[in-house]
Length: 389
Image (tube, rainbow, N blue to C red; front, side, top):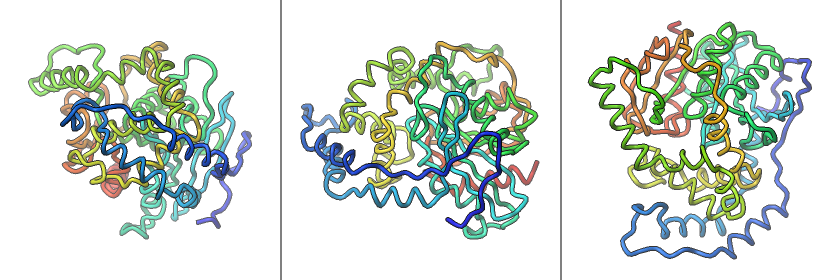
């Protein structure tokens, strides 16, 4: 893959980017892991009180003795990484050109607590489909963005970096930096919110959007709900009460959390582990969906870049700095690829209140981390949707 031609020149300088963590940072992490203090746990706690102590100890033991960051780093660097300064934010992104010279541009947007790494498996499926059971003519030029405040993108220093502002940055990257006048967007979680903003703000550039998941944090109820919508609203209310405390905390006091999670690798792993187990289709066993290496690589990206605090702030910024697009319908063609094991699954009529839904697919395998859990299914649905447009 490393013989790929340079990406399109632009007025904004684009720099090749290689992930290369210093040995001193890895040594410091090992020291912190060995010096950690463990909390107590009541008998038969399982996962009812939060992250299970015994399993987290197992993960951390693996982290200390068997996890090889350099191997993961090398694998990540097989893709083409770049950075560009847009406004006052340095954006890290992956750009893999499709094997077809007329490949359609697509930008993949991760959510929280994911990262660009959750796209590692699906990128070659989209850029080189002939190597994965598809046709070369169905390839995409794939761009994977590390959102501002996530991964190897810089951390915003001013208030207001909400979904709308992130969408402006993504559109600038695609149009002004990479030179794509039109492109497709794929996202879930935070990525879906940004994809929605892109479709609302830049319909002349956005060909279509491909989304997964429904937002259970409902701000305003529409009128004339169907029975299925009423059931969704009730289930969403239950979810928010039982599982939504993280969102309320990150929307109100993210800085308080940041002190502990940025200082303790075990605290960080515990915070992310509970979400990966609860939100994925793993039937209560994380390793039914993610290897320890995969989970820890995602944790390492947060740890090494010290972005857990800045990543959580997107919840605060979007709650306190409202988008000008609130209430605006998405008219560009939209596909909803819904996983029945995701945190929330609204009926089609609910999503059609906001989106011009042209394709609706429900998948019984996979959960919240769609591109990671079922990359082949997502890639195939993207191709089918785009070919039908």
